[in-house]
Image (cartoon, rainbow, N blue to C red; front, side, top):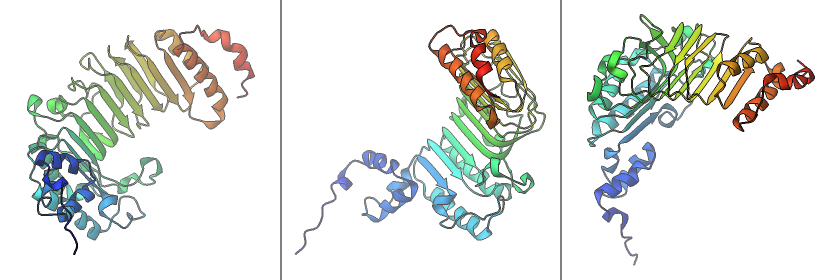
Length: 342
């Protein structure tokens, strides 16, 4: 005669079980509902929600970026919205969605965002394409989702702290809707409307700003209003012609892309600088930046062309010496430059 296995874990308090379930993936969390009557609705109290296209749709995405089978979209929508309808928790800390469709189903996506906002979401991460911008051939076929900033709460009413958007259109007049953010990541985002250089000036609590593959921004000015900004990353933003920095607490700045104007007005705490441009003169650019920013401990200037590898390594050497607080005047290394075969 078999002995029945006792469910010792099931006897734990609800808050402990909720913690255990929160450590599982969405799929595994839902599977716990079949363990016993006690576990039936535990997954419905999860506070970290993540819906990934590749986890829900077993078959791979269509080979052509920007196109996807309607039946797959409807299946994804049904699974996600069924879960949201069953959610019993009073709080959603993190809400992440990665899918292969965009504005065609914008009303559905708006409902997801509204749900997350009502639940006091702190981390909102949304991606609306399954391809990689670097490998994209035709940008016109991408169905950019129009992110509805009007759904976000004003000022201190908002609990949102981290926002990440990929493959969507963002109107630049978000004003104080982003004022509570400490992290903002925009990847493959079309900045629309009247885009001004100081468009992020209202993000007074921002500590980390990342702009990658964005377009629509011609100049970027980081002024005194962003007094908490520490990390700024700008990479491969088409049409960008200049960046002006006046951020007293900025500690790290990374730039990669076309040759642009860089103006450093007040960056007394900048300790790490990385600049990679397509056609820059590495030696002269490094010398200029070293003169303008003598307090920077780690400085790297590189050229994106592979044939400049040896010279890039030379610049890395200078950066290493600066980190070690050693004297490394550029002129002392001229003999090494002459030995680099360009």
